[in-house]
Length: 370
Length: 59
Image 1: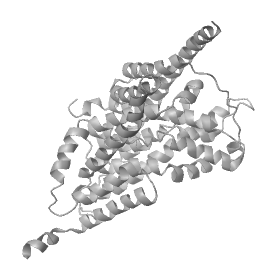
Image 2: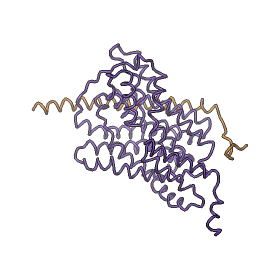
Image 3: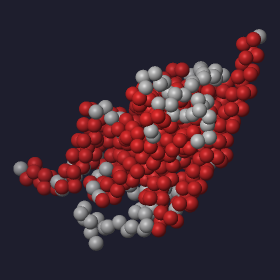
Image 4: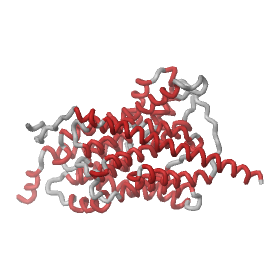
């Protein structure tokens, strides 16, 4: 009889907190449709690894060593993300890439801010949350050997799904009604097939030459895009976008839960990381918007940019682009800036990966096993 | 000193913000350089291949 209840005595209040966190993640995934393919396995895994005397930690730990510590899962996921990305709006107006660069401001600002509370390897890993790019956050945190992979992952993916809630108030705060009403003419330029095929190859080569630490991230992302654009691997492209991406996401989610054990997660630092992630995300949005406003100082009337598109320079593709488009339509039912916003959003995908690579270059002496 | 969760309090080093501002400068400069190079090469590729494609279409 004692066997039946003795394990109950091993329950700690921290474990109960983690069950609640797991339950909330599952609720958000199912009821609110927030990144369900990721939050659901993380939520379930969180409960799984926080049962007293759980036997799940060992197999999940092995999966962690095989798939995450080696960076395989996030890199394979990038093939799927690359296959999902349509860079055509960006290729027809490459100057939009400047907004993708400006919208990485939050990452570097948060690096400085987080260094006030954490050592530099953790601060750099926390800063990447601002990219709203889960796989990049994982790769940077793993390479720099951060102790806080669990909270960083949860924050990165939560903020990715909170784009429609976080970005609009920041944009409204930084823009006037008149600015939000600016209409932008979209001139559709035909992008040749050769350009679309060469683009991923060229980006990989440039990233490899200028920011070598980013080449694995950029390379896998662009490989996925090459599969999409080459035109002869359509079934592989479909598989990468759906089956491969979903499968790896599920494994990634449940495996990452091994870093969500109560003794590591229920801490003052977790709350701080979640707060700093929000700061990074807000300042990324602000960086893009303010850069667009700055550019408008030099542009003639009629050529001005709707500063809202600057906010789409983050990695949450295509969610951020859609949010900006909806905001423009809310202000003026005939203001269509979808293509520009999508172009900026696609550039944010590239820029956030390069920002991750730059951070790894800055701290290359700290790279684990590097 | 222990915090509410029973762990050690974080050491707060405000001057680290100032020391690490150089990474902010370097990072923003770096990202604009990389994206600038990508823009230049993309514009060049667009110019080369859109011209050639027009010629192929005409033929």
